[in-house]
Length: 248
Image 1 (tube, helix red, strand yellow):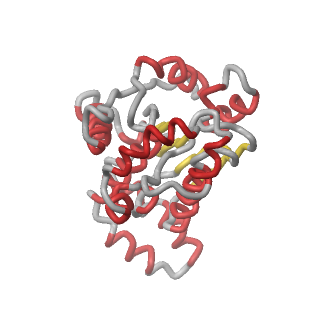
Image 2 (cartoon, rainbow, N blue to C red):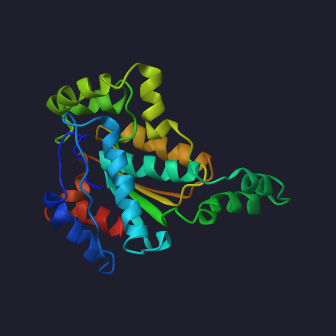
């Protein structure tokens, strides 16, 4: 699922990087859905379209969720996270969690909690999130401070995108649509790749820590001095190629 701050991007423009990812992942098939963008459409339409595309793979292409791994880039990472959270909400994990809590062995209990996602027949096998944009509240921390030297999410990009986030409502309403502040119970294993010196670093680390605290298996790869979504530059930068090898 490509990124673009919900304002730009399309499937055709992301074919080259998708082809590389498929090749590096043992020649895995890759499916890239298009989705509706701001400002022509509403914020929620992007998630609606991604969810419909996922249902298409399952219902019409007859692909088992167990054979699907999501890859979300920037805002696409936020969409993947939100979709998995919605899938988790649709499954009743309450009884499963009670069984985990009754485990007499803490280690086994923690292991069981990390396996909850396997009880959900619609949950994908996992997700790779590249510089995930998952916090839609007022910019702070790295999102506010690092735009001065991030080559991708710079002051111009932030200035263009902020009005559309402001239009989503007050702070509480924006928290409610930000995947980083939602429940991670029942999500599959996550692989998160981020630069320590990019705009979404703080929210990516918050995502990793929150998911881990709720029983999700998280593999986190952090590189220094790279820009936002630097793995897409794998044809030019050795660090980017390293990150792709890490993901695949």
